[in-house]
Image (tube, rainbow, N blue to C red):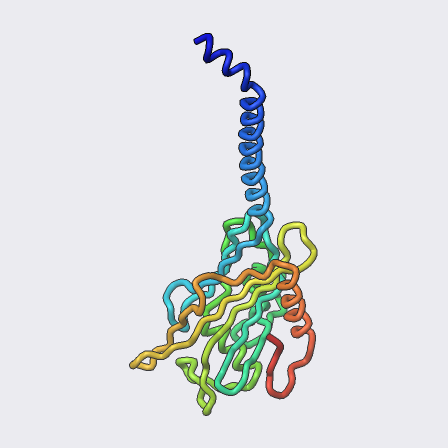
Length: 230
């Protein structure tokens, strides 16, 4: 035991150094966990999905899985066809006569607009895909039948939902988007198939420039073809 104790005393400096390195590693892991939690709290996570079916009458569901609330500023629908692509702002809803309604004060706000705050863990029903598609088609003069198939020679290929939002206390807008391919089965029944597993989050600096282009496109008049920037 005496020899062991002498050996420990002789190598005390080495043991002290190893202890310091071990503590440094522990603190490094701890700081990484704190940084990860901080980033998760500041990272927007929006989910766009269809609910109550997979067909044209399914609901477009927007969920906020972020740690902070988001303010939904605009909802945009991009319809891609075999001939062109068409973009429409569908933030505000319309009544059966196609008007926004003059008695807004008598209605719930959610009945006349999809704009508004969405708290953490909350979701919003943005309407059926049929309603969204019909609004785009109506605005751009595309005739569709009762099954939402175009009556002319143009064929539909996909529909993309775009969101422009303000996250937490930030002032610069963020975005989210998801594209659904339009497929017809043997019975000519339309179904919507998500092109990607998840929703594309547009929160980084370069991605926010794309969101600003969306905002600019909404303020610009449509050209004769209805084409907008990507």
